Length: 314
Image (cartoon, rainbow, N blue to C red):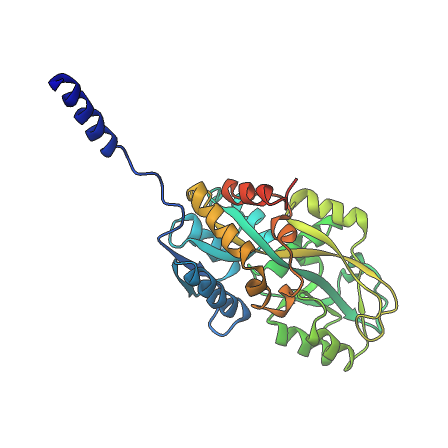
């Protein structure tokens, strides 16, 4: 009897000393966003509130699409907002990254921004190839617009040096168009964009299409871009559909965060999708299926497991 009691006590002690199962939810969540006052910062603040109501202290932090990937990969925060092409740039170790970043995974896709290649409507420009030798304004180095537009030029056998290229903010781009100092500009932006509508009401503009063969070349190098169309009559003077490409806003984490934590985050967002939709006008019709539909793939296994469980992924 004494031996049996001793054995039982030993087994109980061993059970009590076993490691406790991994915590289902994160201890806290830091969300890298964009500059203070930006839409991304506001979205991050709203998302932090969603997590907070689920019992996880959260806060938004300043950031940018490319640096956010580096920060989550380095474990400086749990989540970051970025654009899908930035994931390709990071994984390939392309500028501004010094080396490939593999430790990144996607938790959710939130919305798409559309590439607008805008040209002076009075100029004889029909394709991107016609921009050769012409004054054109892109966005600053390292911006998603500049990175993707460089791939579009490459698909036509062109480089930045083949254009009379200058770089500037969106305001500087549109001012150059209005002053007729530039024959065109490019921006990956939400659709429809109020600034494009305003520009079209000031000067005659046209949108340059990205045809299927060009898109295929870009997507071969950058599988994180998507296909998109700007419907006819979206802007003044636009008489037909314009095929183009898209870049998705993503919520990313480090690939090595515990699977249960990624599952919890995806579930918290999906189960509170009405609150997520209220964070920005472009999210108004967001579905859980769209959250799971990531261009180029790369979902965190925990997030993927949740989406499959609820039927958002087949």
